[in-house]
Image 1 (spheres, rainbow, N blue to C red):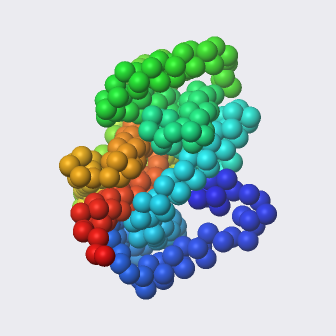
Image 2 (cartoon, rainbow, N blue to C red):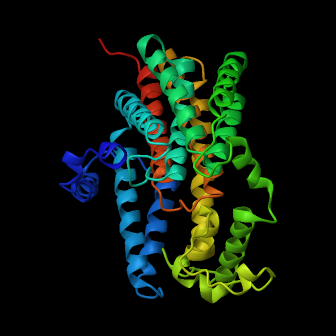
Length: 392
């Protein structure tokens, strides 16, 4: 996570990510016990779906690159589901993730909304990353105590500030959905409402300056709703291209990473403006994770993606239900509420921003769903240990 999000140059130059990915897969194969669930099965199947497209895709290298990326996500996800299946380990890594994203937020604030690079490189990517981390900060402030609570509260403010400074419309959508989810899922509605009001006041206070385009923050956000002009209309046009690709390749899609190379062949003629009829849109992206998967991985891919999302929330529901039973240790109940809420909000943020961003092959959904698998195993182990009589 440090290599991927903080990107310290003195470590990045050694290209350790691939070494870690390969070793993680090998250690997971040799390790015991290894929690498993339908989520991990779907992740493996999605990787195999990407793999099978390599020899058949129009651009074989793009399909290979997508498969390589997904192998990395799958390897780390397997490691997460295995290594974090103990609550002490889970707590440490979750707090480390929060600190890492706090650093990313500070970096974005100091660099005009741009992140350190890779999956948090540009403004939209940085805002997406901060939006997925925000529920961890929110529930950390609500559930933790002492210095960790203060740290979570400070990082919460930093994340909100970074999202606004990015001027990302996808980031704003994620911020709204994450805030709504956190309030609705919280069992301390009044306390959560106070935190959300403070966040709204913070947004209003830092959204008065003009951004890179010379428009105010709220002018840029309002442009999302002008669906018959600008980027909103272009996005709808590209979504129609994705639908055309799906119609031509409904089962397995055109192959990972191939949308951008095939746009020109599937351009819709339903748009009458010259920029849509006369311009070749090859080289553009879908601007939606879901349309990206529909076009590139077909019906099989979108079914697997939706299954992972739904199974993620069902897993979180089982965790919170199990932890609410009588006799469960208070710290286990607290962790189930804290991390269950945080993981739910993180995926809500990813899906909300992903509706407008081409982030289908970003690691967030794979990591967070694997964390849900690990958390369920960890909570059940603690509940079973508490229910087992101690032998003297």
